[in-house]
Length: 317
Ligand code: ZN
Figure 1 (cartoon, rainbow, N blue to C red):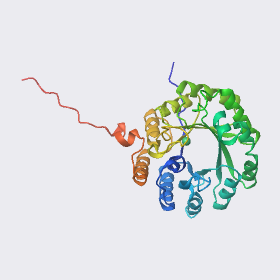
Figure 2: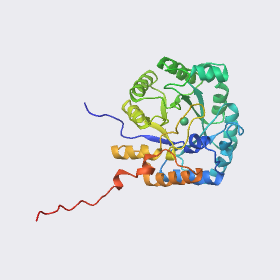
Figure 3: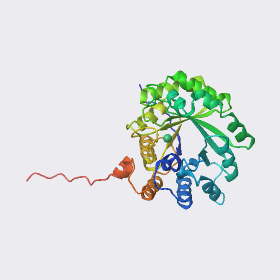
Figure 4: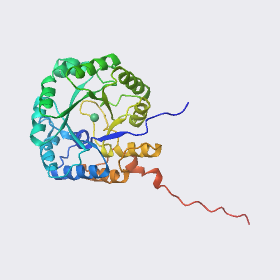
């Protein structure tokens, strides 16, 4: 049996949002804009710039509006999508005001998590997004949805795929067909990812999918490969693996972008992203946050750079 997988994928760089929202250090607008320009130059076509959450709750993201405004003076190529995470309709209003054209809603797949925080089931939460979706569409914004903890949560042992499908259908009912299946809790494993992805692709063939893996238990790249074997082509990653998850004990950040690129480059999978420029950006973000993050490639370098001289065989005397 041949090892079969897709040969071309898209990576969304989420470090500026998912990564930095868990950091103590708050980056300035200038630092974020610099990183953003570097990402565009390196070839990233989809970048999650920040979020429009309440500035008191997520102070790291409070300057997201300013970052989008600053990017208006920069010639962002037409094929580059800069997106932001929003909690509700107010997020749409902020996006419109600062020139952000793509937004993403999020719901936790965990029934326990939702009941504890919102006293609603995940599907009920998604139904409540209708107002935000309508406002986005009226203003010409693209809108997508994410399902976090789609592969398991600390509150529920397993999330049955039928529960995930109910949430997907709730998103579709409010008009969202671009959906991210996210593993914020770092509980996903490859055979499960393959099965869920195969199932949802078959059940909803018209949808667009993203996969989002945290590397909490070292399985993120294996999960990406499993997703690729199921025909998935779009994955999130975070420079240097920066990030975490405030709800989950010990949660690591998203899988490091350079680790994913290194793997895909070795496998001959096309990403359109320059790994050397990405590594330089990852070093920069590590310098800005002031501590090491979870990146194998930053530690060990790329395989292609290992060039030890061939030893000369010693002739016997
Ligand atoms: Zn995440």
